Image (cartoon, rainbow, N blue to C red; front, side, top):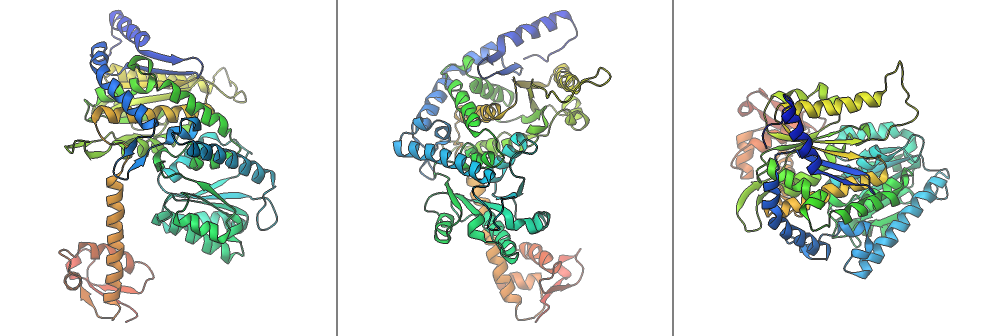
Length: 535
């Protein structure tokens, strides 16, 4: 597509014609998708039609129960979570429906005080412990849907940062005894939620709390965590099926339980996702919003992810949406090999914050810097009635003006953008928005022939971390005799080719009260000699 310009009437007329031709709208769901400012023309759409026919067939097979994650021989069934009747196994469909009912009832009973804390009072807070999608999904639900004065306030452990643990536990203080603690781990063996759980449990029990009566597990049936919760009689256990990945778990218990605990409309959230699923099943590129979005991504990055996806939602409630999409998009599409085993190094980098904040941040580079991105604008048309005009000025008019102004400024510079407009922002709209991006990711993955449903890079990182921790155990055992040694001597004793990982570990140990000390210059690692102070 030639660089858009508003320099004369002919260009403006051409842009208007493109806008009308490429604007997709669904009146029932109340959503518009505009791809007219993307490098995608009629010829491109025609050329992509055969490839999308194959992509639609692949998505139909996935929903029908095909093994989509071949590495783990797993089905991928997040679409069933919002329409249990689609589940190829009737028992799985019944389980989904039953879990939705249980989550809704649990949330209502807890907020009504029917389920009380061990202290005999109503629960006052929620501490949510989860990593990756098990942390980002709930965070999005809370930030997007919680209304002032409704439901319980949330604190989140989504990292193993001890300072984060300390700050969160200090903020809860004595209220930890009346805090519902939710631990999310599908396998039950992931280190981060386990460590967060252990820290929370130790502090809670030190305050006199009763862990089993205020702990909830969200995990796969039969997992290590499920067994622990069952044996100890935890307050509740909710299912996280084997066929749901963390980055697509938000329409399951991972997202529905937080929704219930903040008194959000979880049924509308599911209905919005299901409605968008129906629209994105249409076997026509021009009538399918997810297909249009995937086609725009493909054209912008030349099928190789050569442009980043910048997400600019013009609502504070969607401030964390770009972080949520980072996992959904980048974990799904960032792969070194295609399905044929060819090295391709595919991916689509995602970043963003919110408008109009970004107009005072990195929009300067978007307008005048590297042309290595495309923007996705997201807006909602509904405005709160309690924020009225002052001196004739309405905040919502300025927000709309800033969005249109940024879109126009980017177009004048030949920069690509697409826009999503919601008639109103509510639980149904959030469900629809998530479902739109989920399907776009799936279709785009088919276009570039990669597996969107495994994550070998994540597993490699976990394996490497485990090796580092195992090495630390050996290192500490070696230093326990009290002898002082250089990094080279330690590396030789441990059979390492390089002492670099030992420097990293010992630098951390020596700068905390762990009993280790170093003599020498920290700027010259080879000069250092390390010793356990207790030796």
